[in-house]
Length: 64
Image (cartoon, rainbow, N blue to C red; front, side, top):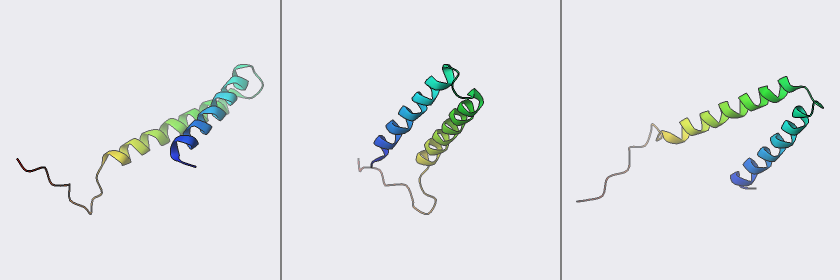
């Protein structure tokens, strides 16, 4: 299973849970906590993806 499929499955589950929370069938505080955790994880992934590894130099630029 690739990353895109995992994200889509998680989004579908979170959407279904959101529907049940909106309808009052499940506590809303757990849903809000899950959304906060998902946003924190997404932010951490974006920060980690933006930095090159410390042990490798940046790639050389193209000759002019």
